[in-house]
Image 1 (cartoon, helix red, strand yellow):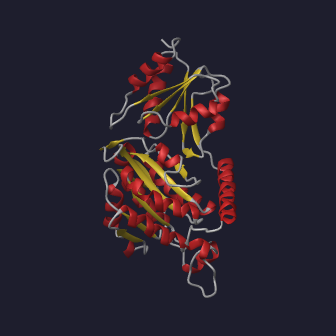
Image 2 (cartoon, one colour):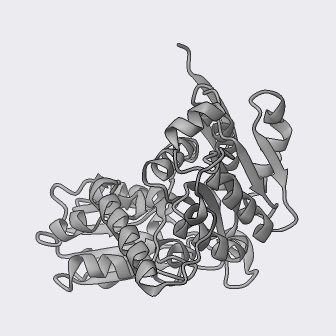
Image 3 (spheres, helix red, strand yellow):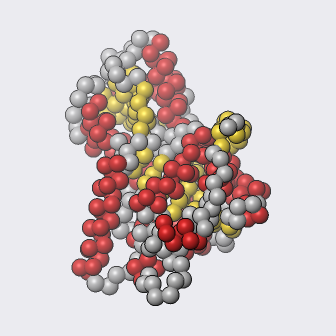
Length: 362
């Protein structure tokens, strides 16, 4: 079958992938730099072709609660926003997590704190990986580095959300949301029928007479022992995810003396820096976490047994570095290089940061 190759922005590819996944609904609100997600869905009018609902809510708070309602009925529903908009959604995301319902949330990050700038950032790492809302919960967090991954992670995010009945987040920096690349779009999948949803999601609210749905419809539990039981059940699921769903890429680590750790499009910049370093005879490698949660701790711990040090490169003041430091457990030095406010480093700056921190790199 001939591949469906398009040239489009990451935000646009994500929207097309959602339609082709057979998503039941999208509820969102415009905010730069992710507005093309909603705009593309409105332009494509999938309600006329697949039956997908596309609705611009009056606010981010409304949109995440619409997702909550759709998810509780077993539908494949999603939203997207950018950093301050995701902040407004945190309560709803916590409710989704506590109700054992699957959903997909997309965050195309911009600079902060506050309204900040519409330029790209990676400063929502803590918000996504540490559970920005209240309570002991996790989301599966996927960090795309290409427009192709923006499309691919829609399917992966939905599939993982339904597998574990949890929230999946695509955490994209504003660069990959706005840049244009070739992308192979997936084939169109039909939306599930109501009967298929009832079979695949026996927990879902379907209106069937006599079914009990109290624990699905609410995240409230008045009895402390019961709430602790719920939390222990959540943690067991998170442990299973951490065992089975860690994803990452490695480049040039076989003989590396030093390793750079970076995610998203910053990893692409770092890879270029490493290729230049290799041409100069420097043995530098790269680890790109794809799942920011669960974090690829073990690969970093293993590398720490044979490399001299690590440099974490991010578009923030230093967030993922904390997880890297925990993974290596003080066995080697770990330093940070970051740009903020929408400033993007170039490969030369990355190499200069390596030379600054590690004296034997010339």
